[in-house]
Image (cartoon, rainbow, N blue to C red; front, side):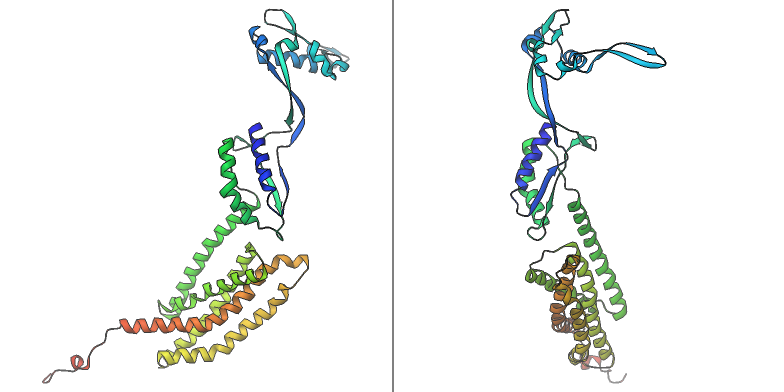
Length: 361
């Protein structure tokens, strides 16, 4: 317990160096002052064990049952102990008699010494091992909890564990946030795979869905830039906003590619079809994005405490959509052009001479 408490105090001192970190504490608080009894060399020579000494001290201060009898149906214990005044005075220890295994009686200071130490209120265990939990609050306006945890993992925890020989792990809200991020990474992969399968089936092409999916990283770059301009940190709600943003910018790309597909089927040249699709759907893509941006922009400047947690999500959608829409109108047609050019280059060409029928056949 003393080792755990020492490690906790070392970690708490390190946490106090971070701005914005407050309410640093652990779940192993100090209790009342205690006296720790140790045998002296003379006490060991008299063959007194620590258990024997503890039993005699407990009997003197807590009482020893000599007899139990019943009176009017009530059980009554007869205890032998020091008087209340003697139990409340430390000077009683100087004259307390201790009986040795040989039957001799010696004063307590001859066989034992005392060390004053602050005790611990309670001990906790995790998975069968003694443990201590160090917790702190982080002001999100002045500090980033994720950055602080990353720095603690990299520079502080390894030193503390090596010095005291302990194990550690991160729990609480930090653990919940990491589990959420892990689930989101899995969700992004599954979503992109399903989107690709659906688009490949609708467009009847394995290459065109990549032009649509290009909108996802384009919107993400805008969202990250928006957080930087607003001075915000990426949070879980920022990632939730990214999921919504991905759906909007993908829809804009689908509108372009679907129009291009219909023009190709109508017999248009692929370059002319790309230019015409961009011109035909420019207004639809722009109006869709502007209405969404206009609806969410007021949230960015909201000062009420109830709206503060929504600002990162609104920032992701507004800036990601504004930046992504412009790039979608330029990058998606360019990617379509590259796909079509590469596909036509790989298509085998046959000369007219080799395709002409031979005379006499």
